[in-house]
Image (cartoon, rainbow, N blue to C red):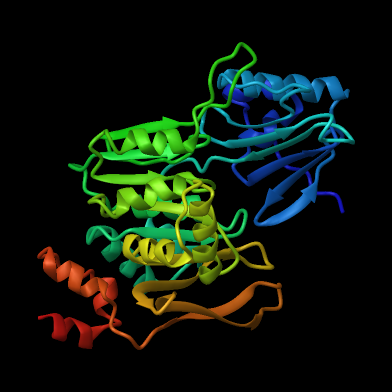
Length: 375
């Protein structure tokens, strides 16, 4: 099914993207996908559409990919046919060429959200309730360590950006990413980005290298854009040695799956650690797991917020604070449902009290008994 015509917007700095320039510049388009150097798809309002845009040749696609990749000091060729990069505005780029892309070049551009998003923006979009975001605000204020999990394009980085807005401006933040896309508004932010090996023999700089380096930079908070390998162990050690208030994201289908995957990533570090000792480190390091899903209508929602309460024998125990319950679809196919509150008093209340901080009003409205108990 072909997409309706998308009015082109002045391409500005993206003129060198060729036929893709008007799509990248169009605010309604959130993702651009080139398939086999031939078809160009876009995501608009959470739905994929085929556009009438085409490239004159496969070489034209390769020229666009090469320009993007080389502009960030990376490379893509037959020896290194896969690359993650970014546009100057922070949009995330993933490219694959022959021989791994057997039918022709593949290019994916995840658009950068222009302008900082705030909690009210996500509430208006139905991503979560005001009280649930009040809880997340409290978690950031109380310096809880937060793990954001979810599938591809479920809104993890967007949520991470919104939550980072509640970090005080007098704290030192160090961010670590494969391709820099976080949009922190604070001034004192040290940004680190990994680097693949180059053809001239320049050594690779991995996420693990950056995590280890960051712990020597006196960070008040550490933000890892996405943990995906052995750097998980060093991140846990950092969180367990005084770097409270840190955050990261992880690909997973469920909150419990996120903890299991984190355990597997720690094992990739190559140390002889027992599963129980790894789980104990995870339970000690993280306070909260926030899980997002992309709904069948294309919307992105926070579907579960859980606190980690410790260990029960060999299992990490969690208690749900908020969860989204689906109730059906409206006539236009949009997912219907609501955000329910758990019955257990959040432990974050104690962290706020210990630091002499007030409980956010959004949270106070749904946990009045907990407020009285804390007082």
